[in-house]
Image (cartoon, rainbow, N blue to C red; front, side, top):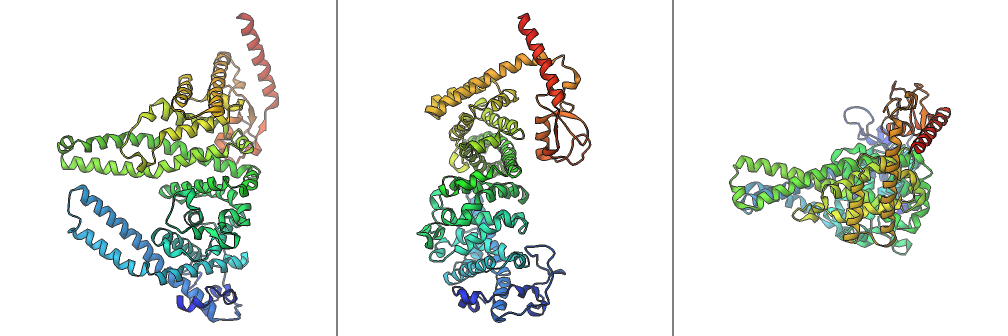
Length: 594
């Protein structure tokens, strides 16, 4: 079937004869693309129906194309997945044998896995076969780009899914065979389907995440992600002077940055173990785009969509809070086992059952750290470069995000400086991506970018993670290790001073709050309100910060569970004025008595 399709791989005129109506004509496809029954195939869109009208200019070419795509879905795709599983099993078996001082050459299980692996490689690494498949899917991408949205909704979802799987498999297993093939259609399809105009069409979050992986694994230049196997020619557009597709393509310049921010939030739905890998790749793509002048206008437009940005920023904060705490709990456990294993007498003194239990737990801890820590590192990098832009920094200072950001940054600072995280040692730290000094540097650069933000300083002072000693120690550590120099060091030092001043002011005011009238207290938190607002759905009055943070993760009124959004809340103007008068009178009385 691939050979039958070969004449229109590179012949645009012939590929134009592929008629999308084939999949909606049961009479022609013979039930292969059924919409109902046990063997039905999901489509990109919803509510797709068959069409009685199918009048192609050439009936043979559509038949070849769609039958070939279905055949590949039932052959190369499961074969590639099976091959990846066999390679993993072979490597894990060899590792286990070596840990037990066994002979890897004579082990029957390992030899069985290797036999299956080598047999699969006969065709999965056959140059002619792989090249034809890659050309077929780039041609398929061009076809999908050509048809209109209504026709695109009728396309079997597996074609796009298989397109992603084949490209990512090739980038890992046969990257050199990608040289000399034009992947322009593949790039443009990935960018188009990720764009906000198509977000309502491609609703499968796992598929959208795969499209992001394609952009990272295939089209991110080697210098940006330390990947050297995929030929440089693959990432570049030969019709744009050899410039990377990511910077030369007009649609990419206009849509990709906001698309990736949206995707960062969406991959939350892809599963606990997959989302970290997806998000790490998205962060690396965003960093490359940020450094490219061609994408600056698109980043500036990001701030125009407040709801999407807050969703993205909230995802970053949630991820960092959870993942970094987990990592810093597991690293000391890893170090403990490393020391045990390094002492032959101590390790031999344990029973075989104890050694197996410890080893199993140790492997689990290593897997978690190797999966989570790259994402933590990329989040710190991303926050650092995003906050160099004033408009984006102002978005992080919104009521919905300011407190959450301050708490997250101080939480990380506590783990690195407050609990001697910088002194934590593990063998081969690079295998875990554990670079605590670099992370502290990134963290303090972020802090320094908010040195002139009064409200951020107050949030730091209000945080339960803040102590004067913590910030002071962080400043001293940065100076001692030379992590910050010049203006950045001065700004970080200034921030620490301003936060300390804000903390002292808040401590003096807290004494005044003790006999505050009940109407001045947040009805949810029972704390003195700074900016009281009315919830129209229940009539309750709470602090703006309380409700905005609640609504980030739950779009209902906390008192009666009715639908509520930030735009619905109403400032309690009269109450706020009354509170300010009361507070000024209390401050004046205090100053007079002192």
